[in-house]
Image 1 (tube, rainbow, N blue to C red):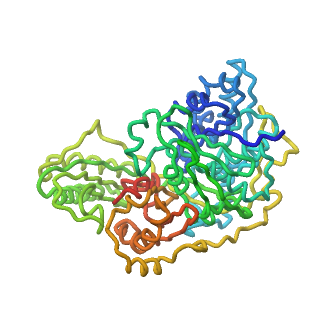
Image 2 (image 1 turned 180 degrees about the horizontal axis):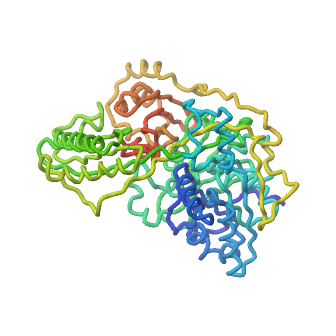
Image 3 (image 1 turned 90 degrees about the vertical axis):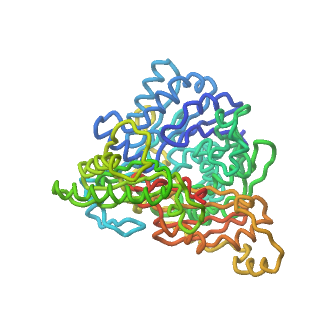
Amino acid sequence: MEKKTIRIGGASGYWGDAAMATPQLLAAPQLDYLVYDYLAEITMSIMARARAKNAELGYATDFVHSAMAANLPSIAERKVKVIANAGGVNPRACAAALRKLVAEQELDLKVAVVLGDDLIDRKDALAGSGVVEMFSGSAFPHVDSVASINAYLGAFPIAAALDAGADIVITGRCVDSAVTLGACIHEFHWAPSDYDRLAAGSLAGHILECGTQTSGGNFTDWEEVAGSLVDAGYPIAEIATDGTFVCTKAPGSGGLVSVGTVAEQMLYEIGDPCAYVLPDVVCDFSQVRMRQSAPQRVEVSNAAGAPPPANYKVSATYADGFRGGEIRTVYGRDAERKAQRIAETVLTRSGRALQSKGLPPYSESCVEIIGAESHYGEARRTREVREVDLKVAVRHPSGEGVRVFFKEMVGAALASPPGLTGFAGGRPRPSPVVRLFSFLLPKSEVEITVEFDGVELNGLELDRAVLALDTATSELASEVASGTTDPAAAHLALEQEETVAVTLERLAWARSGDKGDKANIGVIARDPRYMPYIQAAITPELVAARFSHFLEGKVECFSLPGLPALNFLLHEVLGGGGIASLRNDPQGKATAKFY
């Protein structure tokens, strides 16, 4: 008889997540799967550099030696299956290291590997094909600077590996939610045309993919959970055949699973909620509903889906010089003016030193005086502050140029206004700048294979969605979903009511994240009755004004009446994003709390 519900534990939100996740989740009753998400664009570039130095590296080594080594006997005993994108840019090496551990512990566990995402061997052909960056339209970077090229694969190859009998599935680059959706497709036999179910399974994966960020981490109402996060519970999704699921956590663990925590995670790092594009399905989360069905249990339903795109998104990372920065504290009267003068002195001296060495000027510099009015644009007016953090950063084509900056930053200590101090443990070193280049590639041009215990499988329907729908495209509308309150009409109606002023945080939860050089801010009403007030007060124009000192692009607003919530997408606001950025918050993680 077909299982009606499966329980999947999200054991990793990024490369470097806490080691306590795996044993904690294995102690939870009736667990069927452990899924691990390790990869981001930055991670891929780091792994690519590791593989370049050592052909046996390029994967998440802590997955093998920390998450798996001590826990394989329990995994085998409990018959829990494992799916992880820990393979990075070298999934075969990851699988080989894992099989060695399995053999040493004399366990009966079969390891499969999904291959085909790595396109680095095609960089010359891609460079000559006229491919352009999908957002900026820029040309393909110089091939000598390219470190990695990976297609974002979907979930059907993972399901095929499980169908073949794999106990552990290792992938390279796939979309984060695929490790969860692959288990659902295998268990429930969902077809490529089961769009609503595929969207629901993808949403479950999106909720699990950031670990304890779903169960109290980074939560707006942090006071409710602050004391228990030392033992924060990693999330578990109980997924039914129809795609509805309950989000919970391991019994006895810390943290909190509530409508607020789960809703914040749903809006984390998304753009248009009506058209969240994945390789297997285009998701519409605008009408998703959440209900607190019991303490630490949130029921999630009503995701919708449409046919997937005909292309894979492909991301290349490439080197673009070096960067470096330092943070110093400035105390006393006129702290902000003193900090500004110090920054000007350091950058002027650095510029002169570059010229004397025959080096070009800095490609970019960034000065942020954290804690001062200037850092918050028009959002805050305070009395004079007597303590600020000065952050100065530069980018240069060479590491030597960045080293010049570090030397002058140190030299400013004895040639600055009074009050400059800071904790330091030696002069820092230049860091490589890695940029992201994303483009679309027809699915027919990406060959996916599965190796089962080192042998390539033949005759499997590796990507049923690709085979059946490789010409399908999504034309989902990105307009505000029907039935929502028009902001202008709401504002007019509310002007006629007697109202009181309250902070936005009294009415809503909020979370932010990044997508390259874009940041999103999801704002979720604590009570549906608050939404007209939120919608009337918080407009794209207001958000653009608040971030005008950072923002270089437009601001879009999308509605999610099912929660209800708004999602603001800020374009060109992170200074390039990731490790290409000189900003203090290069990934937009704190953007929702900025004011």
